[in-house]
Length: 351
Length: 174
Image 1: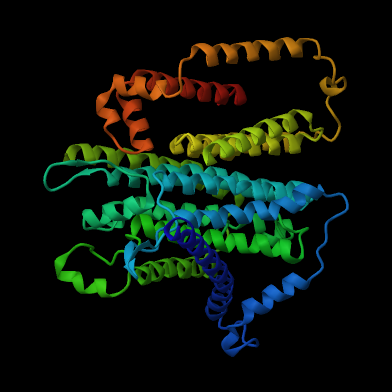
Image 2 (image 1 turned 45 degrees about the vertical axis):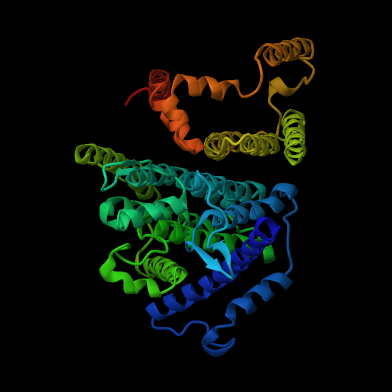
């Protein structure tokens, strides 16, 4: 009874709440880091060094008036923010924050579930997230949001191809021949991918540096982040696909964007940086690193990516739309295919 | 018991959304109901322990193909119904015959197709090597690249030809 219902429900509640808090503090992190990059202080008024700013923001957004444009498609307009938020949250179901541990005599795992098709689940749920953006633009019944949502969804679909192709080359690595000469079947399970890095004693970033960079670039593009934040190009499109939204509905889009950034960071950490594993896992000489709890490793690595994303936003200018499409279709996708073929070739030659 | 309840709930949702797809006036809403329908079909696959198929269903149909549908529907302004939709009853004579034909075919499959569980058994007989594998994805992959390699390759060739054809049609001069 406890194992079947209570613990999963508790885990879901903890992960969900932790995610929402992390998302709101991600906003603060972004404002602070960008402020430092521009020699400003950033939010300072609410609480010491502005640490309570996210709570004040949330309160403000919740009590603001919620306007639905008269000519908007009312049902779709209401559903769109929810559709973009939900996929961003349910991806956390398969992200492993740590291995199984014994806790008060019970085996508890640091992930909600470990499904056989974990990585595919991430990709497919993320692909459903596009609907939120398309529908927001359509339902607003307004020119700029529609243009913005078309841009955003074209961008998402294009980069999804490159990212998914690249992920295949990582999955290929999970199948290998172990020291005893026994073949090990590859896996799509997120826990399985981390365990495979443990068994092979290496983070996959060292085997797949090209794929790592490709997934990072694709992840930036899929989350509509700078330098790929064309859907929100103020000069051209006023506010982007959520121009007509206000109050809590606008906040949902905003939170979904940051939740997606955290998802990308966690997935990249899991696939390339060994998830909860310390550097050079399973090496006896470095066993001392295991005294640091697994989830600390995971969060430190994910945080590095979050910081990197903000840093990139503060540094790089925005792409032009044709440059963005050219980069996606003529550079990233061919590179992903070449990388996939090369991975397969090397694997066959090594065996 | 719980499985049966889940099945009937999901099946009812699939049918309900399917009816909404064809009865809604607004084309965009119709496409959205189609997405919901596909998601519930994926749920049906999950109930059958075919999680690989379920995820692919969401990825390819709900997340890929219907997004393109939605693009088309949104961009050709359908606020005014097209000419063909002026008379909603123009197919009301052929419709029942088509429905009866499909019902007959499904009934024939249900009666003569044998018990459920036949396909996995057949697949296992075709390749005992794959049957030994654990996990849905591994078995699908193993069967695709051993017993069903040639159909698989032909299908991918077909898709490639379709893609080249579409590009040639769209861009007359390259």
